[in-house]
Every structure is written in C-alpha cells, then in structure tokens.
Length: 359
Image (cartoon, rainbow, N blue to C red; front, side):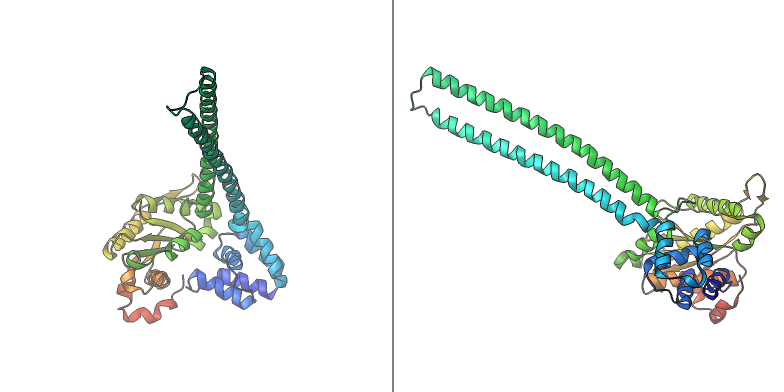
C-alpha cells in the first residue's frame, strides 16, 4: 500500500507546488511512465477533480501497472473515445464526399456525351448538305431526347448533391458539438485544462508578445469543502466561473484548470489592463454571497488569490504560465484575497521566501 499512500499524501499536500509539479512528482515517486494518458489519470486523482479515480488508485495499491492505468483512462477520461469518435465522423464525411464527387463525374460524363451529339448534329446540319425531311425530323427528335435526358440527369444530380450537402452539414454540426464537449469543463461551462493548454501552446510571435495570463485559486477551498461538503463546493466553483465571465470581455479565454484553480488569458490586453481585470474579479468575488438555501455565506467569506504575468516578462508560454503561478502563490503567502504581478514580484527581495507559506 506504500505506493497508494504516496498518491494520497501528494493529493493532500499543502506545499505550494503548481499542480503540474505535484502530479509529475507523484508519478515519478511511484515509478509510473510519463505518458500523457497516465498524466491525465493522476491529474484527476491528485487535483481532486475525479474522486472516483483517486478511490480506485487507492484500492489498487501496490498493484499499479500500465494495464490498470489504461483501464482507468478508458473508464473515466473524456479523451478515451476521441479517436474512435473522430474516425467515425471522418469516415462518414469521406463517404459522403466520395458519393458527391462520383455524381459530379457522372454529370460531367453526361454533359460530354451531350456535347458529342450536338457536334454530330452540327455536322449533319451543314448548309451545303441536302437531307430529306425524315432525316431532319429524326435528328431533331434525337437532339430533343438528348436535351431532355441531360436536363433530367442534371436535376437528379443537383437533388442528390443537396441531400448530401445536408448530411455533410449535419456531420459538421455533430463534429463541432463533440469538439465543444471535449473542450468544456462540465461543471462551469468554461474551457477545460486540455483546451487551455492547446490554445496557450498555439500562441507565438506577435500574438505572444501581446499576451498576458492570470491564474487564480480559491482561498482555503479544502476547508470550505470539508466544512460544507462537495456539493456546496461545486456551487461555489460554478458561481465564481459566472463572476469571471461577467467581468471579462468575450475575446478573453476563461478556463478551469482543475479543482479550485482558474485561468484568464488574453492576447489583446496590456499588463495594466490585465491587472485591472484581475482586481475586478477579486473584488466581485469578495463581494459575492454564496448560498444554496441550506447554507449561506455572506460577502467576504469566499475569496480568491490571483497572479498576473505579461509576456514582456516571459521567454515563452511555459515561463508565462510558471511565472503567473509564482505570482499567485505570492498572493497566497502575503495574506490571500489579493492580486500580485510577476513584474513586481521579480523585483522584490522577498521572492526567495515565496514557498514557505502554508495554504
């Protein structure tokens, strides 16, 4: 049970390490291979976002192996069926596109055949030739039949293409809905950690130079959960997400990174603007009342600490994240319910003592 005990101890640790480091440390101590799917399993257990995974890991104990981890991944992680679903949708799209292309080819063949008939008729209708009325009548009849056949075939092709277009649109809508679900945190409706990582990882060049990141963490959330229960904790998380949305522009990326941790990312707000946004979010949450009819917490009972970093102080997106995280923990250390800029923190002589606080 020593391995399982290490997982549990890591999950309960009060050391102010970023969640990514907590997960990586736990996997390293237990000897788990650093595969992305293993990381997702352990992230769910250690962050507390998947109590089911945490419970099953505890039950497995010393018997943790890759096969069991893969079973947990397939059972609890949303991405387990991604490849199957995407393959299914792609096959459907390919099938419809193939049939549409085949119809277009047939239509081209029909038009080509009609062109040959017209060419032959033109030759026979040479003004220098003398044809009997019977030949002329037959030729006109041939052209009339060919025209009617081509029009009928063309109408049929158009109708079939329209039908296929409708099906393709339905498949496109299905794929868009699936992508939305795969990128959305089910509790808050914000982007999830996967979507946040993908978008942050895709920012570079001039867009990165104009970007800034806020990371926020609900103060003493574990105590709140232990006191009032997980359902009330979920209600607090949902309401905080709502407050963040109401205080942010539409072009700002909002994400729940896991547990009680949130991120706000923008490529169009300067450092001062992001500091104002972070302060606005902090004040709005501190002024909010949280209740479910049974429990009511007035203003000031739930607060959040935030850290801000602008790309001007970071070398890349990785350092942007880690430095915003460092600023967050400075806010925690200095009393919570506050906003700290990494730029100010980097100039502070107290920075070396940053990780001494207890959450």
